[in-house]
Image 1 (spheres, rainbow, N blue to C red):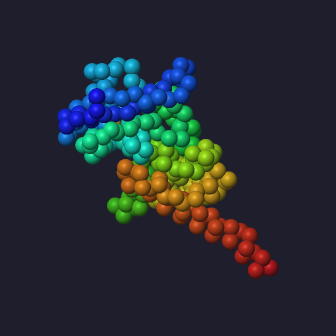
Image 2 (image 1 turned 180 degrees about the horizontal axis):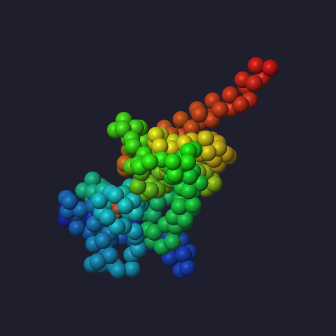
Image 3 (image 1 turned 135 degrees about the vertical axis):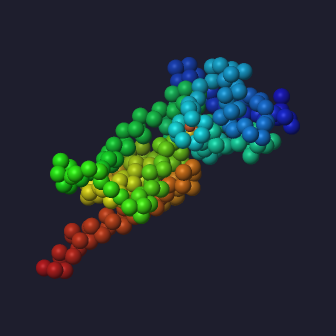
Length: 250
Ligand code: FES
């Protein structure tokens, strides 16, 4: 049955690694309601049509970052993507690109989770915390300096959009690098040097070819592409200080 005025067709990836040889598309017609998101459509399928369909979600509010999928080829939070924006359809719903598929629309996030701690995403101090009396205070201006980077919800849309990560999974990737800048910009932190040492490695910032899709698809308006370019500049300055200037000063 083709999509009609009251329904819209979803073409959804079905895949069982231990059964199917290749991912297949399965079609489902779901009610086209103005307030329904793609995630609502998938939940309708799960509840009313086919209980075997697998996908991740939790908050339905664009907060938890778990419902990321490719919608008509673009990485999206499905809880924040409305069916009506794709009318009359059909809408193709696929798992995020660049990640192994565990089942249907569920991808393996292990590689992503292992990359985040590599940039030491915590406050690093160079003083003795036992000597500090009370809390580390910040002014509103100091909070503003890193606030936008703290908005990342680890939805992995930026990794799905990144052609470099698609070709080289060793690349640290946009969210991890933006996370490093979040801590570097924090007035309480002294770990910038330590993080730069990690980011200037082969799999760090230099792999980025500045396509910029990571920033384009980010639902929280974090700017990983900007962070990566700033780190490249910092690294270049460090190189000049360490290797070029000493030659002229000899
Ligand atoms: Fe939590 Fe979509 S379900 S971000």
